Amino acid sequence: DETPESCVRKSSVVVTGVPTKAYRLPSEWIQPHATVVNVSSFKNVDEESLLKIPGVVYVPMVGKVTVAMLERNLMRLFENFHHPEVKQSKKQKENSVLYGHALQVYTAVAVTAMLGISLMRK
Image 1: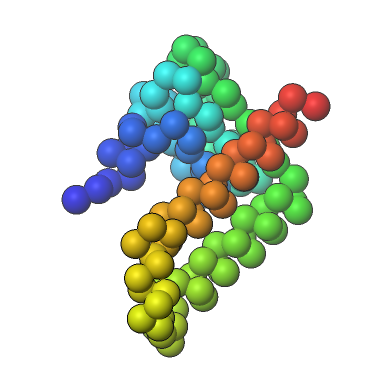
Image 2: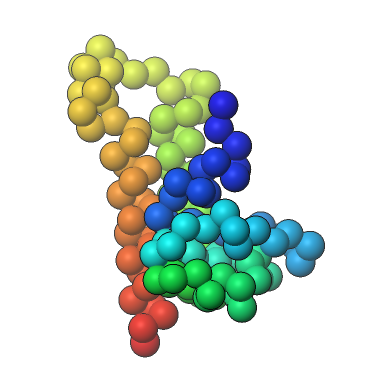
């Protein structure tokens, strides 16, 4: 079984968005050369210890529009693939072997990370 720690430890892109001051993502979970994007209005990581990790790219904050787009994409993923009323046709199931949920989730995360990195460079 996967835990938040095991997922973060093997991730090269980590997106935090916990809407509370009390939560902190442990920096020791982050691997070298990872990209960490904070979409919360609170700092979910200890920036000082995070930046001591070799090669880490940290985006401390994104704008409200980016957050809104992430929320919209999350809702679309749920409605299109996980909602109880969703019925996939036989053809969709055959196509999902190569082009299913994983590719769409990867694309959403990759685009968001690239947007965060480009915003950070400005």
